[in-house]
Image (cartoon, rainbow, N blue to C red; front, side):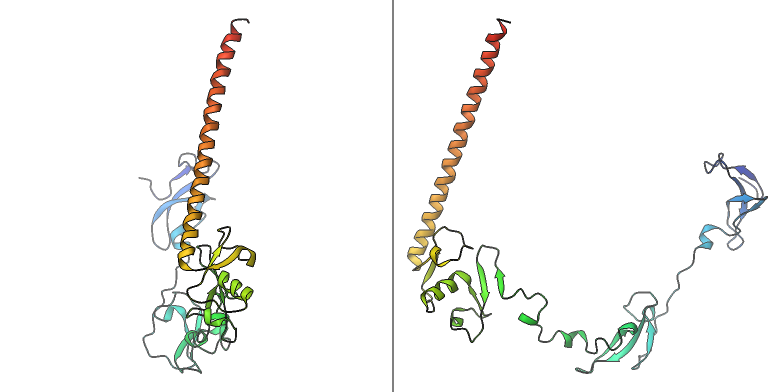
Length: 250
């Protein structure tokens, strides 16, 4: 165990080899450690732990706040333990009290609940222009009561795009029993040339026939791939035999 005042080279301590260290005690906490030595004295009189600034411990104020009172964030229960200043204000709409950052005083007079009232549809930040992609290939369009095809909408005011396109092409609203079928089975290809009206029974038959045709097409492609793979294997074996025969003449 070293004694206060012992001096060693940094190489012995596996530190900087060109420096000298002295065993000294911290003037604050009294902890002993190796410190850099200059002119026979420790260059730092306190240790690294004591030199670091200590975080302020905020005490939460439990008294009831009054309008216009300013407190630090660390003094308000549930807020971050920092020194951001807040002011206690009243919402002019619902008269509820709230804490607001002093730097944003007067910028948002209403509380968050009152600010979000009525922010639906066009007023909402997530509004996408009345265009809704269901993820299944179908697309829905937002209509309004003054639209002549509004009776085709659901409770939220949306209608399928392919039904709306067909109704506009026919010049009338579609009945509930009328189904719109895509000729090329691409649900996003909503043009009048690619659509036609049918009933539920015929529509199901057309969908099943399309699935069968797609299955036959995929099966034909698989058979073709398997045939090509077998031909490649046969050609590789013939090339190997040819190389072995040619090696006898070399």
